[in-house]
Amino acid sequence: MANDETPLTEPEGDKNNTPQAEVHNSETVAGRIEEMPAADGADILKELTTAQAADVAEYLDPHTASHILAEMEPMLAASVIADMEPVEASMVLGEMDSDDRVDILAHLPRALREQIIGEMDAPEAADVRKLQQYPPDVSNLILRSIAKRCVSKDGREDGV
Image (cartoon, rainbow, N blue to C red):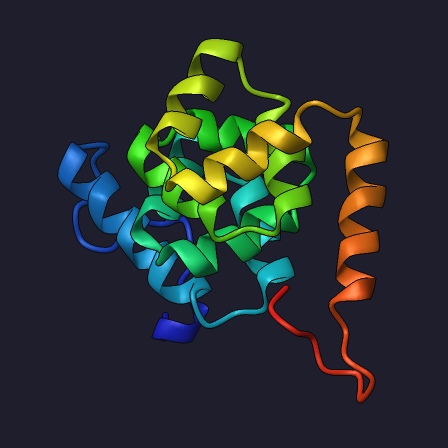
């Protein structure tokens, strides 16, 4: 089978379910989905267990992982985030738009959510805590309002 035709979730070489095969598989899947559109990457992660998807997400750079997870339903993305190391999860969430970040965090158990927020940079953590004060629909309206005010007259975004 040619490399392009190799299933994304099949480990190459060691077919046993050993930790080395799982690591190689996660790294291989991450390498293949890194160049795909985020929606396609999300579709692949949806086919994996949350633990496998978390392993793959940890191999991706945080920016790419954030875009892929933002394409998933918040509850499913939260399940993946929950299986990630808190430091890695905070880096991925830190790369997301504020509304997506808050939507995903809302689906995590309180203790884990606080642990992940504690790992975030101070401005990101403050942003999350501020938006958590509002119901999800209200926080999304606030963010959209801010985004509209930050678009310059020529249509370019100014720092959002």
